[in-house]
Length: 392
Ligand SMILES: NC(=O)c1ccc[n+]([C@@H]2O[C@H](COP(=O)([O-])OP(=O)(O)OC[C@H]3O[C@@H](n4cnc5c(N)ncnc54)[C@H](OP(=O)(O)O)[C@@H]3O)[C@@H](O)[C@H]2O)c1
Image 1 (cartoon, rainbow, N blue to C red):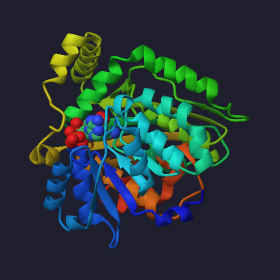
Image 2: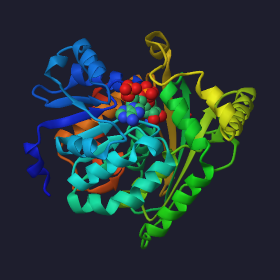
Image 3: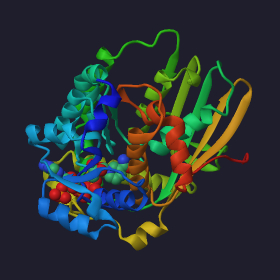
């Protein structure tokens, strides 16, 4: 199925989960920034709330409304058939996301999400990558703060380094921000599924072809003081290294032997130790269903940080890249990582898939692989910094 044959679909873009916390921010961003003539629709399980949302958007009357439930495959198939691109915020994805990916892979519809759940990414690869390659659908996960700044930041860093030589990149994330009920629910759910996450990763590696003639690794690294960024570096076990590794596998430009390590950067040792203890405590609580439910109830689905809190939030990811006798320092930075900037990254990625001139890809692909330069350009134009930084 060629992409051209999909231009007869009623919508360029459908936003599923539009009434959730990040869904509403994404709908607002699209209403404020979408190109003239965008044919788009708000989708979700509650028609009345979708209509209220539409009425609250500037120019929103131009958006269509589609009702669909994540648990009803027939409705999801109809939704996928109505769109060239479907963007979904309906998580936890490992619980609610599978049927929509199946529908998009089968109908040749481009798909993107905000998952930070490694298990979901691996399950989707095993179940739907082959079918998506047949139909031409691009399945792009992690199109928010997980993992756009890291994936495109490493892509940007690699391109400052010589070609055809072994390269290493270390990423150091710093942020000041709060999170939403949806993020808390997804994180607790993934922490509680450690064994299933490892099983999905093993299953994926059995299915994934070997990489002939090149080596790509993303080891966890060890906690240390990183003089190159002047901070304590703590290994960060998010989905990001997995995504970066997949971009490096897909793109020859990352060189014959590429290694990425991913860290949280914390200036003061007591704060670093407190952070490790807090993550350990949450991971332990997540193993006990009653305690997990109590923690989850602290923030309900649909709730998230206020506009005032978001206005004070920020993130910076610093990268140190080395290879071929060169060392380069780069930086990706922006405002509220989890919500305002995530909505921006998600909406721009959706518009990029719908309208930009991109490399020919299909199946499960990363943001760097499917949209590298075009999405970086869009995000820079929208106020996210990508720059070569001065040496420390
Ligand atoms: N990667 C990142 O950096 C990043 C950042 C932010 C969020 N996220 C992820 O994005 C997801 C959403 O976060 P959020 O804070 O926006 O959560 P939220 O407010 O709870 O929104 C979840 C959305 O899913 C919808 N939904 C739930 N069950 C459904 C079903 N059976 N059928 C159809 N729709 C259903 C909800 O519909 P109703 O509105 O009808 O309840 C709501 O629109 C989470 O998985 C979160 O982890 C990732």
